[in-house]
Amino acid sequence: MNKDITIDVAKLAKSTITRNRGNEAFGNLESIIKNNPPDVVTIDLTKSGMVSLSFLDGMIVNMQKKLELRRVKLCFIVKLEDVLKKLRKVVTLRNFKGYYKYANEDDVKEIEKVEMNSNMRPEVVKNKESLIKL
Image 1 (cartoon, rainbow, N blue to C red):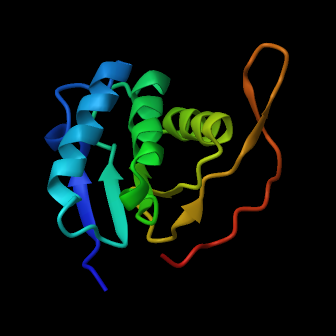
Image 2 (spheres, one colour; image 1 turned 120 degrees about the horizontal axis):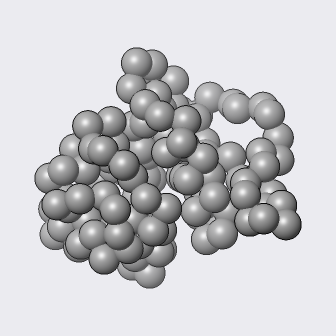
């Protein structure tokens, strides 16, 4: 069993605003974990400023493309509900299974899928958030 790692997003990309920065973040993450992929990678988003939907999408799409990294569980540490809403939208659009936890809590939860309304705004499908043991 490989050791789990936690990485501050600032070590992966210069900013968290664009899809290109999301691609950059994934490339840097891949270089860190490719020789010995951990079971869980936790990315701390709490110290970054704005985190864009495009940035998150860029990271997650690249993670899905790498067959050897698909077994790695991806968890995000969040402090803002806005970031969690963006994560919910991305995991829904990309059919990706990801996890999150709030910065001040230890409980890890699966990121819920959402339904998109006519304005492409997410609406949570279910309210139940079960605890996940990574």
